[in-house]
Length: 459
Image (tube, rainbow, N blue to C red; front, side, top):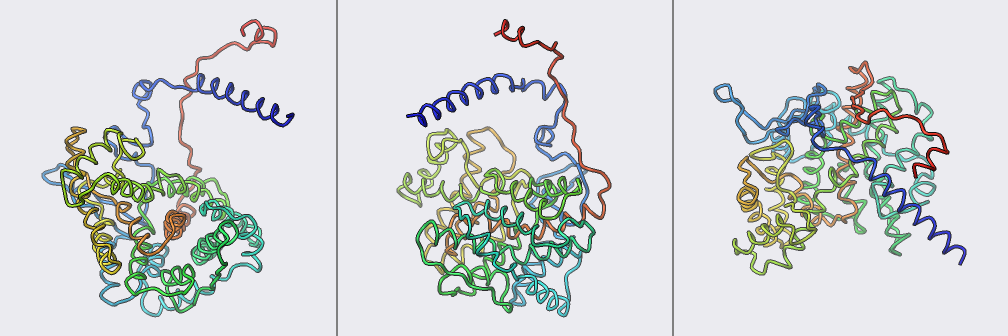
């Protein structure tokens, strides 16, 4: 009974304090326009406010015609090289390309054959986890939230590094390479521990094979039989390449720059970036796409009927179905206009994978939604700018066909993005001279201090 009253007191107090906090924390939305505040670091037209320069990657969504910017098919460049060319070159040579993508992002040029062999060997050397790390850290406190387990593991690695706080570029490069190399194990082992300790499943821990690519090792370590098809490994390698980097303006990469500029250690900087990516507005969109399509299949009886599909999409925007958020997930992007090049590339391989898995009917439904959704949005919202599918539209479906559990969707994104984050941390250390410090304007008017007796009267 005493515990009940104690809990009741806590709940009542929390409710009162929450109400008071909400009452005193509201800001008049009109003031943002009055003071010309770039909310979300974006101009009124949605473009990001320029806050830095980078050599690492470039995102293009417009082309100039007669001195005017005109929406165009999106293009993504890593160190000046079109990602489509990077992927097509690897496909032509029948090799996995995530490792050479890491090399390109970090060092500015594509490796030659000898450099690539040596780099893969170096990553293999860095794959070794500290002694008993799996038992003492990963398995100590398992969780369904694998992102939280990744964050905890990365922060704990600080204690195993004799030069953890050294921010000299050579030391940070070593730390980044180690984190890139062991990220797949941290992700997979965290999931296997969760399955074993919280789901009562058999524990399966496989050591990575040095000769295999990162994509192959993820599938090998994740699956109990260690088997996968060449196409499955190719699609996962493709996903890792496409998620490795996306300009300096996304939330987690900007977080990496901001935190690095403060002079903090590598492990803290990566943990901060992971915390950013964990947010559903950043890294979890593909899960929402999967959930949306599951709901769509319950409502749409004929998957070939455009009218039925359009009606469901219209209901989505009207907040009548699914999560009542008024969004068609996977459609539209903050940067791209006519097309997201990552989605364009991914789409072809996802189609091949759907055929291999006997899920072409599901793929065709997604293709119909991709075509119809922009029209429905334009009609409903009276918004006639170009809208296209983004990479999250197809990635969740691809991951499910690969047998990846939903708990690993965002951690896989993070595993790939370790490469881009590393490049940006090093770039900030080399070029950044000042701590990044944005400005916030205080708008609360000055008030007199009130003594305790006056506060009582005021109440």
